[in-house]
Image 1 (cartoon, rainbow, N blue to C red):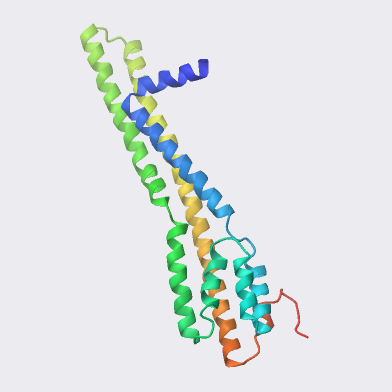
Image 2 (cartoon, rainbow, N blue to C red):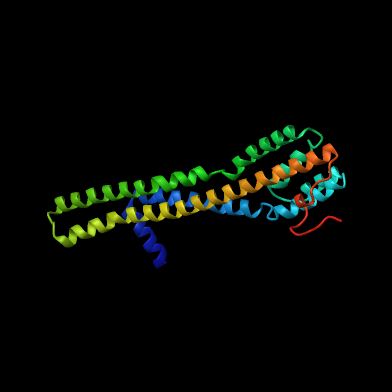
Length: 225
């Protein structure tokens, strides 16, 4: 009860700005959890997936390669399946199709990140506005009561600064997760681009009747028989 009582006391002292910051923090936490779950659901072994697909293509089993993609979770298998379904086309067309699929899925990677970025920017200003209003109220109370001792002034200002502190905390946490997700998106997007290009190369070799280089789908150090 003391914990909740202290929380509501702080919220009351901070006024509207504290409630606005609480709403921002709830939204940010919800998005962070959703993004963490999303990235956890993505395929983690890109090289392993390419080895399976490459092995099927090398055996002229495109349908088997498509089944491999459909048996895996995440965005990358869907993108590679999109390319495999157009595997009979020339390399330029396959590459264009994979590029379109990549661009469509990029929006899924960045979903709601703009909201976290916005919260990171506006939270300090919301906190500062609450502080300014709190200081104004504090000096108005001092003027009405006629009591301007340092202790009274300090008490009013300290209460007003609560919103600035809260705004900075919300902004710092939002910036940390915003940059974390941006880094993950960049790395995962680059990984998908490399995988898509490798698939396009495999299909090109397959369509031209040339043997697929084993390094495209076998583990490092493996040798063809």
